[in-house]
Image (cartoon, rainbow, N blue to C red; front, side):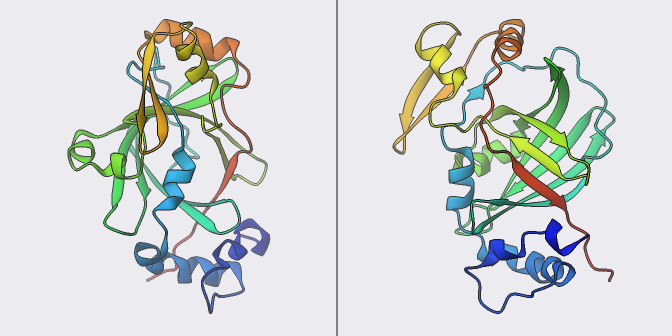
Length: 225
């Protein structure tokens, strides 16, 4: 992994950081539990709508490039960490962490589909995680979907539905898709209740359904014991 591949300067608010990429990886991971701010995932998921019904008609085989530990940068100072493992050939386990103020980990199961030539991953919070309120503490929906792709350097780029007002929210507000919205903690949270076929059709016809820019994740290699 080249020094440019890992955003060492993403930790600019933490003193005495290492200056090389491998050292940064080894130095960062033990400190995540106590260092990451809870605002990280709040900003990440702000206004992201959830969907009551799945967007997946026929789940595809897992993308073999997905499993691993991934670190990415949100803005200039915040780090996002994902831990992805294969649960079955068509289901991934995805852990999303906010390691401060008791937020803990939110646990999701993810399945893959394609719509309009885009690779899409739908994440559904596990029952145990939902009962513990983990996702709610991070202001993440219980079920939502993202678009993803891999670049030539095998970095994982993720596009969320996190624009100020997303196309899905507008469609619900205007009555073009079934759903409802509610105010929560100063934000509007939209739950789309449209059936799978209608949801897929909307995504296929809406090129800007996902926000920009993408969040780029680099796979992190843990140091040998």
